[in-house]
Image (tube, rainbow, N blue to C red; front, side, top):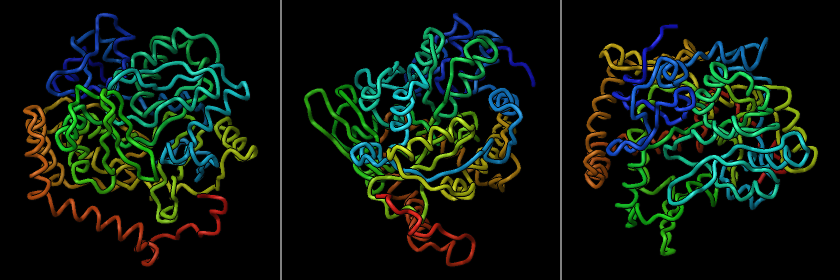
Length: 451
């Protein structure tokens, strides 16, 4: 693997994801919110050591998978022992999560059984600030927020891992685990034995804080007045809800609100998201995400797609079923592919876009995962068009021209916006793949006990 001298390329490209590994490896590096990009990034280039653990420089997926799952077979979805569709049987917990409620059930079970002493997970601090904290009791688990979609500084999670004795579980998105384990393996190998289980999310990308600002213009709140923000809840798709310090609430459906579709368009993602090939969270012991499948359309609360990569992960899930905390059925790896799409699980866009950025001579992370070569890369004209749009929209965001971006979506981008819903209707409602013989859906009678 090539050596990178420092973080200069990460800073110039805006590719930082805020994992905090560089800060932990090199105390001269500080990560802070960039005033115009509105993402967290290093304020100085740091050293070669800082660059060596940075997921925006490179990730040694093969080495890390061997480090974490020694001797296990690695396929296009990473190390996979089994795949499940699962759902919490506690309706209130499930509805609040919108995606099956499995993570909180797992954390409660691990703490109750004494398998772990504490959990490192995100909690709300103030406004749109969230930071990792320790959770030590089952009841405290339910006080944690749901998934957070905006970019955060994750250094507190690494500091807690370093400072906290005992057996720990960690909840994290893919790039956070990339940074965590790169730092642990390189700088703090003694910390590996502390981690009993990592619960990873099937990632739906991070967004810059421009998304929150744009929604403020569309819904009528001042981003500086936000007291709390929730991205999910109230059903399988859920809604964004912002609460201001005066107690006012502003909500938007994640599926049908037009403003939400503008502000959470992929051009609002952090730049590194566009070359991420690890949405399936290759480094997590147990992976949880929404099951976006034709066979799960019926759910009124949410169903989790669960990937177990270790025996302990399988044992932990089975215990939830045995105690009645969740219902679960085992399925095949095809359900990962169908739920997340080839574009995501095989990095069909990300690998092609990374190649394009290298052609332009721009800083590009070296990310070659186990899924490389399994998909059909998007054509160069496709990624070139995206890049032009991205550069244009990032300039509009920096200028805070959010209303103009909404107008663009309603005019120049209308066809693509409409076609997204047409594809959703054809695949998930009409089940066109099943009708054409491309796949066989899971029979409804297998979902006995699911809501």
